[in-house]
Image 1 (cartoon, one colour):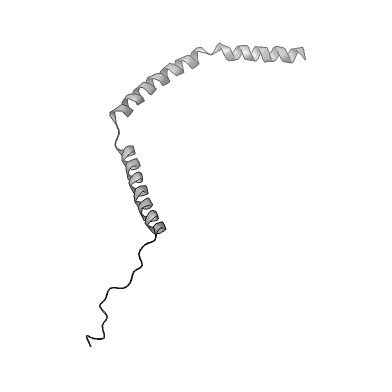
Image 2 (cartoon, rainbow, N blue to C red):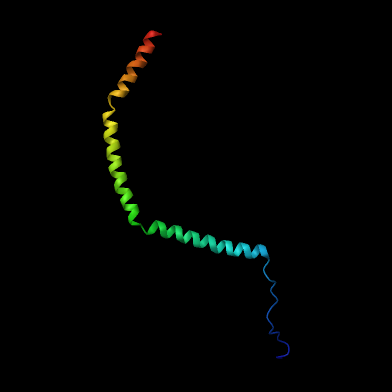
Length: 86
């Protein structure tokens, strides 16, 4: 009975170059994704400083927009005058 059992390991073909390339490419892709996820989760101190400067720049930009109020009125007057000339 023990002579009937074949306990030799099955013959598995060696992976081809393309299979090896695909395997290592998938590993590199997974590592890259983990690095990207960690970069999003773990903030850097440089990022916080940039956010603060952007918020102050945003306030300055809002003030500039408010000061440009008369400019659209001049444009509207020019458009009305050009229509009147027609």
